[in-house]
Image (cartoon, rainbow, N blue to C red; front, side, top):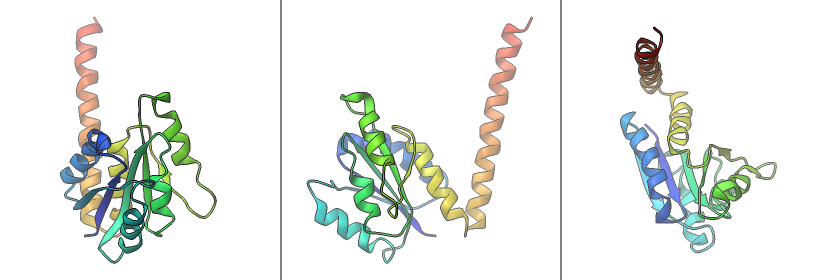
Length: 164
């Protein structure tokens, strides 16, 4: 199975990325995590992206806050799917990062999830990998069934309490 590359611009993004790693782990998807900055370590970020396919990656998650150029910098150096996670910061509540991540020029796509959307970034990677992996597709289907059951259980509990 291909693995997912996870790159964050700062270790302050780790709480968001733990949501992604936890989700990937639960689905049995291998991953590798790095801290590379588009601005402070551009050479390392570029080398990671350029060699990602040869190193067994099938998709990359890139998270950053504020200027949030990391996902775009990664995407500029690979044709693997890149999922950007804009991270909330103390300035502008992550709207700056969201706009920086989503506004990529034509030809360099970055799929962008919600601010701090680590779970959805991991699930999007899983769906991409599941195109060629039936077992993973089955695990995703089962997760969806379990998630639906959890909602229906909550519905029944609320209805039993309030619908008298």
